[in-house]
Image 1 (tube, rainbow, N blue to C red):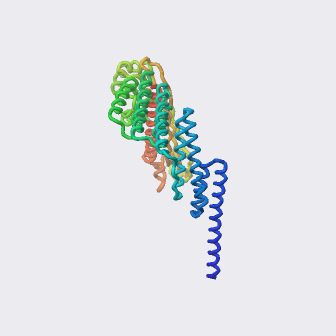
Image 2: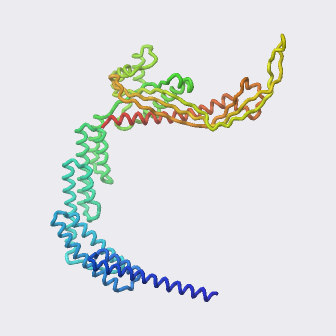
Image 3: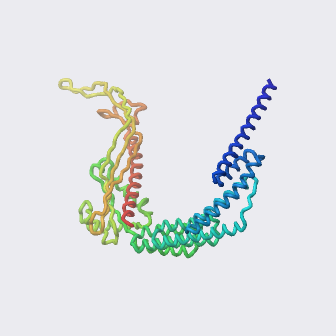
Length: 449
């Protein structure tokens, strides 16, 4: 058995070697076909693949070098023609292709000597291609085609044409200047938010911007903020009676407090929050005993405190649904007072009671109104929140204290039921606060160009 196994391995090794040689021969033949068609670059790659499979294949090596020489002559002629036609970038691309051809030949242990003065010619055409890209970038910048200009400057330093350090730095300078000019143009067009964002991009062109760029960007952004910042004042949260009846009056008070302490304190750029206490003092004076503020009154308060927009928040609807309820029936014996003739007497009666377990889902809607100092409605939108949590409760047509509940007492414990609802309502409050703040900021920023 050992001899047979060894012979089998020998046969497999011979077959594998033959397969490898056949594959190398296939690559050689493909290279010959490509070379005969004048496709010298592709032929070089096929010959290189053949040599990788069989380094002893001298015919592939000889043909590869011959095809490489032909590729140099052909591509350099094409480059001359492209340059004369005013396309130095494509011309330089032909030399990049030749660099790749030489690199592929070196990968299989061979070397191809380029034509005389090849390095000088290549460097000169690379420089012309880079300069041409810089000129195109300048033309695009002057025409206000900002993204196109940036692309040309980035291409000039991307490495394909081996730019010098000075060329790389110049392309960085030009792209930075493009962004600064773009930002100033946005300012002139009264688009402060766009100007701020474009100026910020100028800081990100270089890995580490120079001091003058930082100062220029800072000045631009300061001007943009001065022109575009909106001062926003928020009135107290109110609720429709039906919402207050379910959630309790403390819910809207807590929501208002949560917004003021956590969400209105860090507004995004271009939004400044007015002191809510000052606004509320002014509103109290304007309301004169009225229960609710109208947009007109809020507008007058905005004018008094120097705010640009007022935010009015109203909780409009709450929907509470029990889902996936497991309802179980039990029986208990309880005393009951009954009348027998002229007398009342106590009898023991068997009565049902129920336990319920499931999920309690809250859906809460809020309406947010943005008004200006004239009392005009600028925008109206809604924010919503949904929270779900487990619940347990009991049902009994009578006093649960009469029941012998044992391990089921928690179903009728008001504290347990209240804690379950408070947990869900606390999460609901936080989710709605986030939705109100995010929606408000988005709407305010949408009005700033």
